[in-house]
Image 1: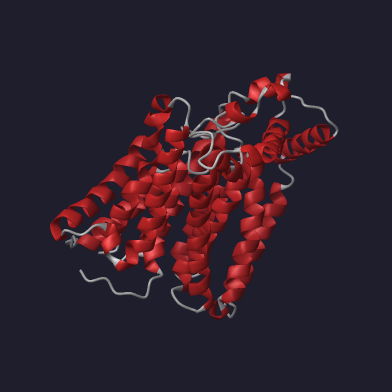
Image 2: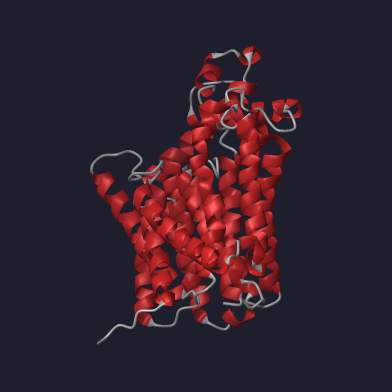
Length: 406
């Protein structure tokens, strides 16, 4: 049978590849991201239009380019700007994403392709974790940081859940269940305690979304899927890795509350957040400088062994405090706008009963990143930057009612 190639198939194939590449290696992820972006740049040159000149992309462009400008201001605020300017390459996704959206909006995005990519990505994540677990690696995560790896697994997990609830073909449902099983195993065995909290919270977000989509309540598959997720979460509580790390975290938190500033992971995070809150009123309007976070606020008055250790970190393990201390009011506001404005638009579309599948995925992604930011840095990581900007380039224009003039 002859396969008919078209621009839409080309874009959908790249979307599928992105959700696989992002869990594999940065080189592969960047190759896909740049391919889509350069396609958009080609259209920009050909039609002599920049993203902000296209109505559907004006908001997206303002949010992303505004965030990049705020980061540049934070770099300038650094006492040694030349030392950190190279890290701006991590933020280039915000510059390129509107061009990616220019390429994406010219095609009809098929969510089946996106779903297949997410499922295959989950299968890869699960396979990597299982393989490394049997090699004796305590926190298996492939090429990525374990916390980011777990966050990506959760993101893909709930994207698959939301799309899976709308699927009817048995073959697709089987693949959905298998990929969720692999994803669930990965989320448990990466050992990310903050990821487990995010999983539970997003689980309830998904349930809420289903009750907002009244047409789905008539389908027993919704209740069945929710029951399966609940069973998986319950069974996970009997997993040794989960129980041990949860118990350890609880003990570390109790010790920290009692004044024991040990070198525990939980204790360090709580102490960084505490100091960040104490020092926040002293932060200049433009912040203390990009990646000049702990060094700038943990001064001699906190001169203890644990503080000497956490001074070496470039973030406070809380995206909101990290952005505020590093970039002041502009960078914190840019972060909040990038998270909450898309969320409000997706929520409005959902309540208006328009583009509900797009809106549901958008809500899950927005809320997911809000939760991730409570326990980790967000846009300082290349994988999280790429994931957020690329997904928003797909879904934020997708809920627009305006028709794009090709």
